[in-house]
Length: 121
Length: 384
Image 1 (tube, chains in turn green, brown):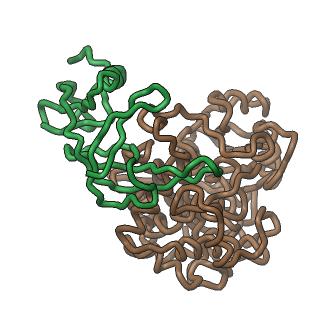
Image 2 (cartoon, rainbow over the protein chains, first blue to last red; image 1 turned 90 degrees about the horizontal axis):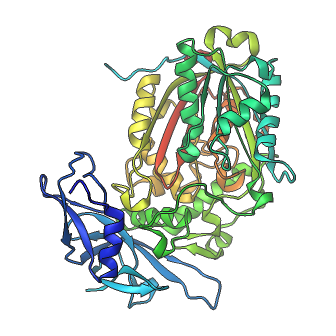
Image 3 (cartoon, each protein chain N blue to C red; image 1 turned 30 degrees about the vertical axis):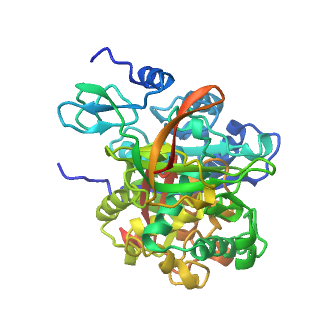
């Protein structure tokens, strides 16, 4: 695992349609964003695991755009495994997103690039 | 070993600004130098007297070298702190440690930015995050908006309370001839302002202006020879908690909490002792968060605390008496201006906005996205 290139591997998994996060075998804690070592402990005993995709909205904001471009949502999602990530909630109007809402991860393509977004669970 | 600080062993003997608002046709370095010469002149000093150089500019990662060259000096100690808008308070802390240890005799802390006239928007010199960029947050405002939304959810803070922060800042700016925005701001106008990244709208956001500032520090035993009104550094502490907002452990508590506890303990003061607070109001939520974290009110009570004009002119706690980043000046990084205003208040030099009898002040800096927080406690000679 000392050969892990976390940033590269995360995006390669994403291209394959898989949302993978890291788990430290020593502490059992999950790590996001991907790193070479667990924060605080520095353990490099990390493995990739499939994210459950379950999350809860921790905070959100609606970014205004000059019409006709639509306003859009940016959110912070607490993953079921523990770590928090920035993402967005799709499938509902940005103004409808609520803190505490349960959401589920989806991989979609934006401008040819796969990204993780969330939809109401 | 106990956390310690050379309390009262160093003093700010000069503080100046230059080009606040619009200063077209100058480079960042030229603006910083103008402010520096003004400050040095106040103390009867020249660049060649400076042997501790502390500078940061947004467009030059080697600004420490560039500035030493520009001033024609060879400093014994130089720092180019890159924690964002808190760099200046951190520079003051390091300058104090260096002065107290005899590593330098005259420290100059400077900043200059032509952000408004050169680009018209907040610029950033940091690497974009691969974990954020796909989601197109408008940074910095979206990160602060996420913090505001969380605070509103957890503590019931309202949009009107954010509005009171903006209105208080504007009322102070109206008393400051150097402030950029001095028109009356009503609650109706605040609420009607265009949303940028909810819940923050145009009037929740700091200005984009030009501006430069500089302060000069020496050891206390020399301060009275250089100025009639030395302002002593009594405490200084800083904390970094994250860089990107998704990594902030709790969006409602900033590093200001632990930094302020340390700085106040070093100074031997409590919030109730502070006469005037200059804090980094990049966005309206900042004032609420930082007043809570510094202990002026309990966590979560900030919105209610500032309501009813408590921090506005005539209120119990003068905050951001120059008009702040919201209404006075904000040239990309604002942290040196909180120091200048705190010093000028303690010197009795603030004219119509003077807080009568001010002896103890806080100057606070914030960097990144509530990422880096730094607190200085400053006092007049009566507080030594």
